Length: 414
Image 1 (cartoon, rainbow, N blue to C red):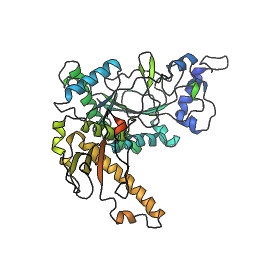
Image 2: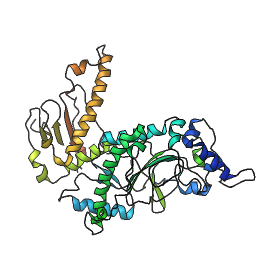
Image 3: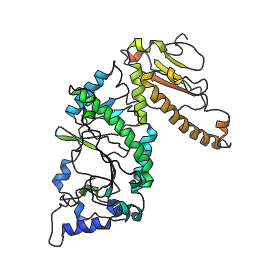
Image 4: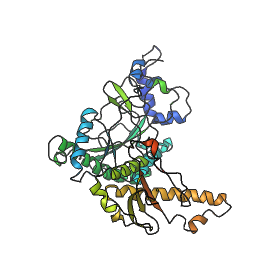
């Protein structure tokens, strides 16, 4: 492995300037089909060795905090305690049920990716090294200050304190950037309230100190690298702001320093949030679930029961979302948003599958939808708690599903 040491025929600053003035970024290098990376990107072997994640099977898990009940007197103190512990011991945590829809998350990631995938001549007009305001597209903020550059490009937009003129934002991601800023500010302020209370201060103290008034949105791009063992996507660093709200895609690669080692941060999916939602409902005290417990066998509404066929042979929450759909207000508040969002996602996916099935039977793709097959929908959230004698019973007996199509999520790792 080569180290980033100068040689007689290598003028690093000249190479850095040449790369910077090309305005092509590492995405341009990658797209050009290079098979080896320029020397300015090669890091010393000891630096690369220090960044390897913990390979132990007992590697600690990143704290995951559920924000769905932060304004509930029954749950807020516990959430504050979780945030305080995570901030103290990790300086990092993941949040679920934060109120930002999956549509916004996906569209934000897609918009930033679309910007970076534009032709060089389109992106280059935004290429600059003027930091602190407006819009800046560049490769490596510290390109002229660091010993070895990293394999990433960045689109940065300073949203506040000086309001950014929306016309300055690249049109290809303008709408999504503005929407993300509104959503991100809301979640960040909610987290800062929890942090403030965890420090024994009033909830609004951080906002009073204008901590959320200076905001910068950064969209990184880590393109294909022909020699990933010689460089890094980004060096180890601590973000300068009070709170960084990080939106991660499914590719992975994000690491957090914990103790003496690095821990990989696995993306939290919408499916994970649905899983957490159902588990949280079932783990409420009995008195909070009792109003939903019933044995009506008719379609419609919301039903909590243990074994549908108890009087003829686990716990489950049923929410009818198609024909005779439950009123949104009737869905348990603790998991209302997740059920509604899952229904939208699942319906779209199920209808796409039914189109394929329909064509496979020699019918028109929309035949199943024409027959209203997707209108009789029911959301079922099973719960299989610890059993002291699992060899004498079962979680659920073998059975065929009674609907045309069942979209089943494998809820967890059990």
